[in-house]
Structure formats: C-alpha cells, structure tokens
Length: 206
Image (cartoon, rainbow, N blue to C red):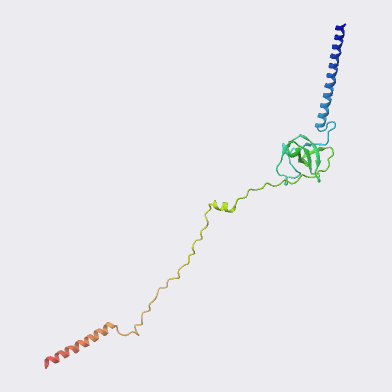
C-alpha cells in the first residue's frame, strides 16, 4: 500500500514537471518572437524605419544633427541596404532622425534623399549646436622670446655726389698780348750791359 502511494506521487510529480517545462518553453518562444518583432523593422508591433537605398556610395553618413555644415563630423555610417528605426524628421523633412547606438544618446540623423522611409514620422527639433573647441592661445611675450626670425635692417640711402666740374682756361689773344717777359728782360739786360761798358771805358780814358 505504501509503495503504491509513493509510485503514484512520483508519477504525478513527473507529469507536473513535464507540463510546466512545455508551457515555459512555449512562453519563452512567444516572448522571443515579440522582442524580435519589435526590434526588427517592419515586424509586428514595429514603428517607422528607413532603408539606405543610396547607390552612389557604399555607405551614407550618420550625423549628430540635421546639417553637414553645423554638424560636419559624422558619428557613424549606414551601409547600403541597411535599415534603422526612424524616430522623427526635421522641420523641413530633409533629414530623418534614426536610432543609432554609435551616436551620442543613441540618436543620429541621415539625409532623407538617401533613404527610403516606411511609415509616418513626427517633427523633431534639431539638437543644440555643438560648442566649438577652445583653441590654445600663446602669451605674446613668451612668443616674442622664442621668435627667431631676423628683423629686417634698413640699408643706408646712397646720395650720388655732384658732377665733377673741370675748370677751363682760355689762352690770351696773341694780337692783344705784349712781348713776352723774357724778351723784355733780355732787352733791359742788354741796355744795362751797354751802359756798364760805356761807363767802364770812360773811366779808363781819364
């Protein structure tokens, strides 16, 4: 009697364990199917999504904001044919906000002309403009101390000398000039010699 009751109890416990395991596996498969449907674009319970259909390049850029000028540095890329959940659109509907783990906050922006949208989107305001990085400044006094460029020296100005003037002497006119001085001296010497000789002869006669 005791063995039969123990056998029945063991049989019931085994059947209960089998039934619970079957229901747990079905519940697990149902939860997994729900998660997959939510995470996969286009599945049951999913929202809008985009698909990269731009064939000009292998991948399109994902940016932190809806602009290539204000947000020039991409935070990721989306390969051709890849999909991503769409969260909203810019006020001009030219950019689409998507869920992208590689961007800050898990949100990025793609150009609407490069993708195909499935579903409807709400208008989303652009994120704040990124703050420009502060550039390092150098103390002017310290920079001047290490400035090795030679300073330009001003060359002295050259003043040309005045033109050299060569004096010219004009010869006296031969017609207006008197006899040369040597002729006059010889004449006076000759006259003196004659006077001296006459005086000497006169003294001897006395």
